[in-house]
Length: 380
Image (cartoon, rainbow, N blue to C red; front, side):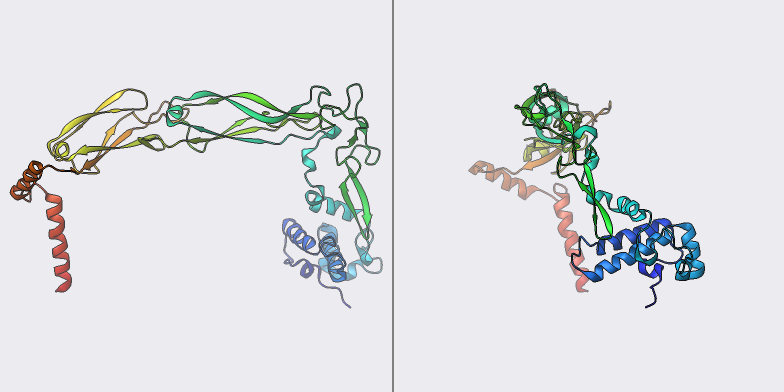
């Protein structure tokens, strides 16, 4: 049976560049990998064909020969030495491909490890809620965080004081072992040392070989003025201690600002809704508002103020983080309708309603006039 075209096998055009070839190979190799298709002879055959095609096309010289002569270039001694000619692997080339393409899949997280079995500690998260006043002023907060710290008995080695870890005899300190499975080699985590590269014959009695113990730590956190809800603060090196003397992770403080009973925040601006009586809105008046900086600001509302009217108090909002700028405070007027009227109050209001004119209530009068005109037009 004639061999399939290498470009068709990989599903790429003959003009495909190295990046496209590698991407196509990776996708297909993961799909037909024997580990994902145990006992599937068809998948194993397809996997071999994919490897053969990629091994040929990734090499500029082999690809040039293939483009000119096709499969004949590698038959009967053509250019077959060292490739996948005859379906075999030559010179360990597939090992290089496998390491490059599947290293992260088979290696599992070995990038976290360093020599001597040391492993970086995990990052930690701490949720902190502050008040709007604290966000306005800024503060220094003391927090207590349960975390893993370096064991002081063994100084993080994990071995009993007076002893030290030994190089793993199975992987010789690399933390990885290579095994041949069928037609390719697989590199796995060393089963003896768990990928650490070292073994501990006599573990530390305090940390039981981990090199770290759990303890609650007290930390100081600086909350800058103007900080916003949802801000994340990173404390480098304040996370969990690493295994066997490895570097510590980081601590992330996630801040939330509690709702305020009077003010709502939008960026650097604050909003406050203030109820005023109907008579104050009609006749005009004044009132004082206490702002977040502790001072009082006087708001003057003119005669005939309508519901929803906003008054701006410049520079009375929130400070902008790490800036000299300050937002504004907006006072929104809510007009309160009188309740539980006395007989005399009702009589006065009824009298006022009788003597009122359109000029006293231009919005309501104009609204109903406009509505009537609109529907009259529709009926014409």
